[in-house]
Image: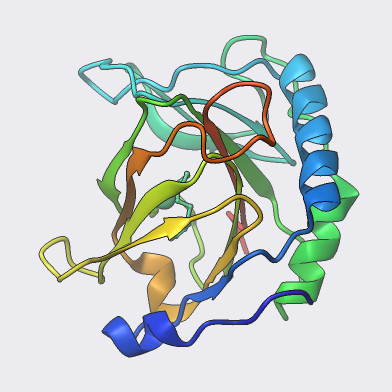
Amino acid sequence: MQGIVCAKLNKNHGISEKWVPQCLSIDEQSALVDEIRQIATQAPLFVPKMPNTGKPMSIRMTNCGPLGWVTTKEDGYRYQETHPETGTPWPKIPQSLLNLWDKLTDYPKPPQACLVNFYEASAKMGLHQDKDEEVFDAPALSISLGDTCLFRIGGENRKDPTKSFKLQSGDVMLLTGKSRMAFHGVDKIYPGTSTLLKQDGRINLTLRRVTD
Ligand code: MD3
Ligand code: FE
């Protein structure tokens, strides 16, 4: 594995996320972006809508894997086997991501969902917990591509203190144990900090288990 697993965050608030800055080489990052472009051709980006209010989120997203996370005004947050607009099954998770999951986790089963989030320069993601899955013992693996962002992570309660730090293209985070239930969000994108993508913006991939 390239990069160093940082203990810094553990010291900061005692939860067990691992942050591997520059885990992926530039070539690995470019290859991933090509694969994500193909995924977005088969499963077009959509704007997730808040449950009940229907308020659009500022990111666009898609998924790959047997299950994808979606949200609509009518039916709220959920995982499903098909794209909410085309009704088609999600594309497969690229082999390179399955390999990364095997290398960085000791979880015995492969990820079921890979969320693909696209942030334009002005997009953000409010502080939230991911709890739409049926199981929480599996780790979540997150990969950052493109422009740097300001990421924030706290504890298991919304009011717990948070720590902010920048995630750069090629950084990987592994959320296990308590950190899997930590509140987290993206406060800001720094446009122009990476030349990986054709335009300003950031892509985040999150690999997850959903069922046992
Ligand atoms: C997963 N994405 O898609 S990834 C999300 O950068 C999400 O797009 C952010 O939060 C992004 O739900 C953050 C890093 C992350 C941090 C904590 C997690 C992913 C996590 C906790 C549980 C599951
Ligand atoms: Fe999240």
